[in-house]
Image (cartoon, rainbow, N blue to C red):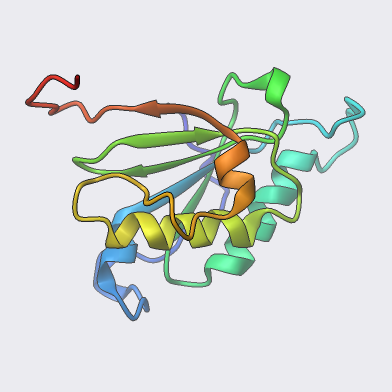
Length: 144
């Protein structure tokens, strides 16, 4: 996955300001090439504006990265939450103002002991907008 080298990124774990350092282990990936619901080609794109809104909401607690495309174009504004050794999540149907919801989801994810984002407390946009839940590469047991 290509990351946009020009996008601001939260500091490394060593300088993370999170009250709970586990939040530093979560990364929010925002599709910067997503267009708004009208399909407008205006710049900055709606996805880039969502990425900026998310960075502002995250402060120095959580890493926010822009990616060129998450391949979820039919669901418009898209983002993913990732954490090493945990499930990854892809969300769509977001709004430019969904940054706070993504950060709330990332904080819930950071406190998860089983590598899953708890349903309780998850913002509605992350409940309705769930596109995929992807297992960790090191999945050791088969799900039933």
